[in-house]
Image (cartoon, rainbow, N blue to C red; front, side, top):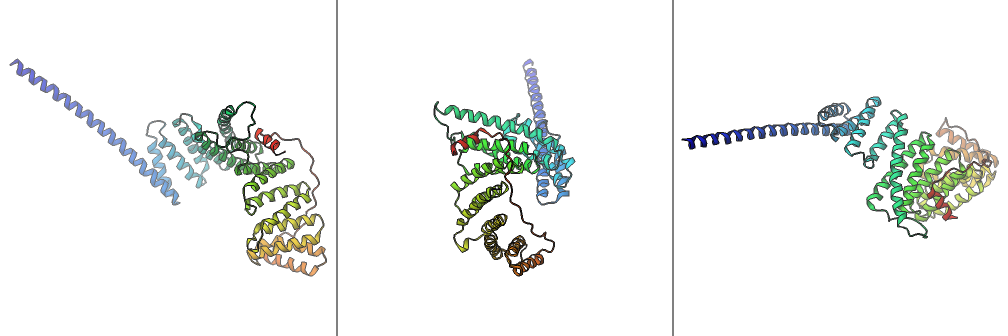
Length: 427
């Protein structure tokens, strides 16, 4: 009897346990089912909103992405899905020129991403750069500087660690010529990506005439490239070119000339002579020399460029540009016969490429007409003027440039250590 009662109690206890376990399992299943449903709903809204954004269905995209962001706010704090929704909606609002609404969303995207990555800014450099570009072009420009300073501090801090490690590998008493290929690939790749970002932001600050930060960004990029790639990599020519353009805009022509020469030297050493990059860098250097009043040196550069095109079939805009530049230099030197010869060739090449009625002919026609007038060929001069006016009735008549006087010397600007090393090596 007692034994039977005990068995029954044991069965009831086990049954209660099984029911409780079933309830727990059911509740857990319901919770998982609810969570999965939310996940699916968010994913569906986010994907459809992004797809509508890509298809330029902006109204539909905004509704979908707004709903996705609202749903993402119900997820646990710090969930990166909220960052994704905020960022995509912020970019959509930027496209729709609703910048004041977009700004806090783009900031929230970066803040959540920073928390999710435990403050590891290296992975967030592209996102940080994107927010800087937004601030500079459409948002609160005053916020850009601090974010740029933070980005520079992080990039240069990582660069110093890597370059310090590399220097420690060099035996005492040896000359450190270049470290190409010696940095660990795990750090080399992100550093190079960051240097490209610095160049892009430098271009942005330069376009906004924010020259000091542009200079810091360009120098940071140059330091990284010199350390990782060595001193004869084509990518360095781009950095020298950027710094030369910046110096030229600041009227620091002597420094601009030096940077342009470095850019040209590296490009010529790597690229074939007829590569457009070679002429573009030669042209920049020559134009800088003209501004400095060094017309004869500029002339020699353009004459050297004439060897780049060796056959009729290779004629191009660059050859026309070289002849046009030579003609302009000869005008400043009052050598009108040589100017006429160069400008005639430039005009014929451009006509062959663009046609006889192209608006690109107007400056060639005007400048050639001016030269022919001073050579006493008045009838031909008037014909060329008439052609230019027929193509562009509102075009401003050509006014000859005066020969530039030598610019006043200015104090030397501070250069990065890698640039100074490079100069010493060249000398």
